Length: 266
Image 1 (spheres, rainbow, N blue to C red):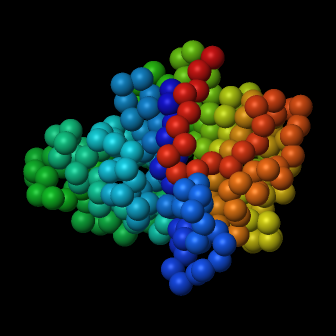
Image 2 (tube, one colour):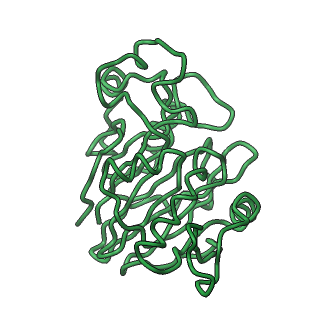
């Protein structure tokens, strides 16, 4: 399977509007961060994780010409407000786009996007055409097994995603979290790659700090790991250079960046 990080930034993106800090004015392209999202190639199928407000720009930049399904981690604006772009993917495929989300997130999506169509008999008419699926149990796309992983995001629930390929490779995408419940820890072991929220160094009530993320990664012991959902407080080169190395994570811990593409295989 192949994963492309479409965005690695927080709700405001980086550079931030009206900010002239060293990161926001940096010439390092890794310091330009659209809102956090990913596209995962699963055999002949493509899974989109979240529809950020930047989805149109992300799709054009990375040639995301098809979406066979969408999984939502939660319903905060920076993860759902590109939902309307799904109308184009329905038009291209001439079918409804399957949407997977927790029951709580589905309730929010129903409310925010109540105009979305579910009956293809009505035609497309420039309106998103989707199939709603409650993400409570593992499901399959393109021969890959996708397992929801409950995460703590302050008082708001979020859902990470573990993906197991037919060849035994496994990755997990876990943005927007400040804790991993005990029942979720086992779902995040034995990974080849883990993408985990690492907001900034200063504590935050709903997100892991870099240090907290690093400690969680060390305990989960994936082969390699990347921090995602980062603010402008983190310069890519300086932060990455300061990350510790552990024998438990032989491939190291790094910062993700927009456009990072990895082939994950055994």
